[in-house]
Image 1 (cartoon, rainbow, N blue to C red):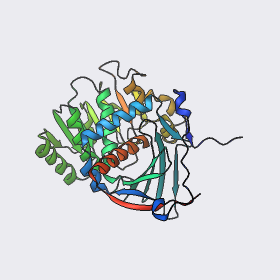
Image 2 (image 1 turned 180 degrees about the vertical axis):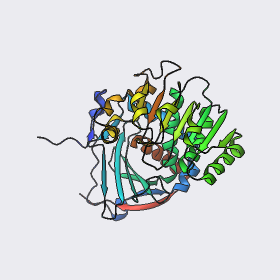
Image 3 (image 1 turned 90 degrees about the vertical axis):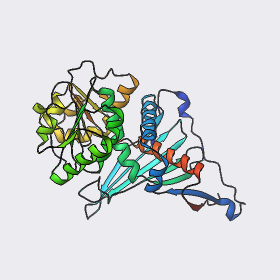
Image 4 (image 1 turned 135 degrees about the vertical axis):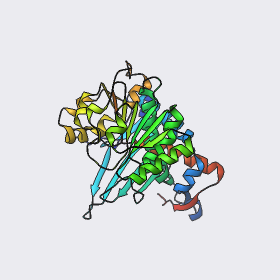
Length: 357
């Protein structure tokens, strides 16, 4: 049986099937002519080069491109492995046809927490016309921005009118970043924050008041935060069910960054269950909730954004969104950072010598 191609070609447009070959490097080139620059960009430089509005705009564009079949995905979609110390390694990739750029995203972290500051995250950008590497981008900062921006954007698309009460379950880096995006996309009237430690939820509530002028308060239980909220975000590293289905009222949008956190009952009984990728979540949903769980998914974010799925059809619908992050968004943000860096002459150039053919 022939092996599957590394990258699946979008079927919606036959022109996407044209493969552009890398030009040969002449054997008689001098050494200095065979050197090509690879730009290295730090997380701090990424922060300097793009804003939250840039992040929202770029994610919106790449979600639409994915829905239009303009993103090529590898087969299989990702690689995961562990070493003998239980450290984890992940690799994802994609090609963005419109931008003529490909990217490989690789992450390593210890056994306890993928979202920790100790995790290492890089995107290697590749020019698809020549297949040559363009940049190595430390995505530590853009990862947090993308992770939260993509799910808050989906929540905004699926929220009922005048949604204004937000429950944050968690008070760490992702929850803190989430406030930036919820305040940009929603007119928040109240924010309730709960976390394991009283000092972290109190600190985030104080920041929400001081930085965003929000009516924010720390609460002692998840139930107290969630009951009556229009919007719920769980952003913890617990890897277990955090919510009771009975706490979630009509019209609420629950957004979660971990498949386990909503719990089986809410996953099964939500009126609208939306994910960023069926393929990415199929195995995990099956392991968590049983073989029937992937069938509970009603739509992907791309299908809702593109109009292929109508999304919310009544104000009373309870919506559950689970996202784990799409490599297309990471690559798109890395490419935006790279283009800005070229224009502003920012970054460290690393020479790569191309061998003669």
